[in-house]
Amino acid sequence: MKKKMVGWIIAVVVVLILILIPALSRQKQPQEIKIGAILPLTGDMAMYGNNDKMGIDLAVEEINKSGGINGKMVQVLYQDNQGEAKTALSALQKLIQDGVFIVIDDAMSSITLSMVPVAKAKKIIIISTGATNPRLSGISPYFFRIWNSDAEEAIFMARYCLKEKINQILVLYVNNDYGKGLADAFSREFTKEGGRIVEKLDFDENSRDFKSIVARIKSYSPQYIYLVGYAAQTGIIVKQVRELGIVAKIIGTVAMEDAKFLQLAGKSAEGVIYPFPKEPTGESSRKFKELFKKKYNKEPELLSDVGYDAANLSIYAISKGTRNADDVRKIFLQMTDYEGASGIIKFDENGDVHKPMVIKEIRNGKFQLKE
Figure 1 (cartoon, rainbow, N blue to C red):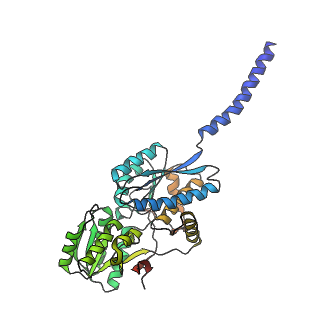
Figure 2: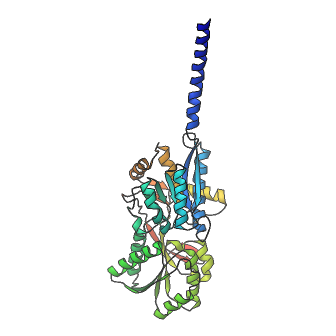
Figure 3: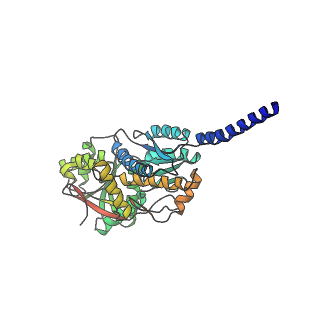
């Protein structure tokens, strides 16, 4: 009798073990796949972060509607860097503690430069949507960006100016990593090919009144001004330049294609020219624009498409079974002609892309191809 009882107990225990072990195993497995995003969601640069976020949210919504990755939903852990490097570093540490190994980064080079050393040491992938400083090229095996380096943009613009017989130009730039990167690369290429820099002037990124520096510009009587900065600054500068009677042609950067720039510059924006990535015509771009307009009831603005692409690249890598930065790096470097909303994405050994560029012009208050 006792032997039967013992046998029965053993059988029950075995059954319970067979039931409980898979259940416990399932509980240990993550029920969600987490991606990090460190963006300026408040402060002066919030327009860039929120444009990014709309693209990211759209991509994640799509994948989750279709069942996620192998049945697991994708969750983005957003951190607001408030446009400050120190805050961004704290945000990165928090995401690392949360077990994230892919982080989508914003469009501010100074913030990205501060985060990359930590991300490199901890083997965290950073996908930047718009940090463009040339120093970021090859800075880490785990850093990738889906916007051209400033070196590429600056060379393109310098050569365009010389081709158009613009041989002398005054350079005005925001005094941070973004501004210095573009100003230096442009000046280097421009002078190398025979052009002359009339003067190089800089302004603080927190300034909002530029009357004194605009007065200095007027003293040089330049015919052309190469202006580098963010919309919150350049919109005001262009307006104050015109108010002081300066008729110089304004040549800008990709950051000019921003609704805030038009809002701040008003009619003074008319005639500003700037480089911009050539508009993609593929199916992915068409689908993105259609989905974006349906979800947000407006056209995509600067960085929304690259935010969408950054999320989809993260999802693509994770769907291949990757669980660490080294695996993601291999997948990214092996990709050939990945068609994103922002165009063809192919990373070189430095984590850079090389998208074709065109010249655009502000005409009748709209961003248009230069005729």
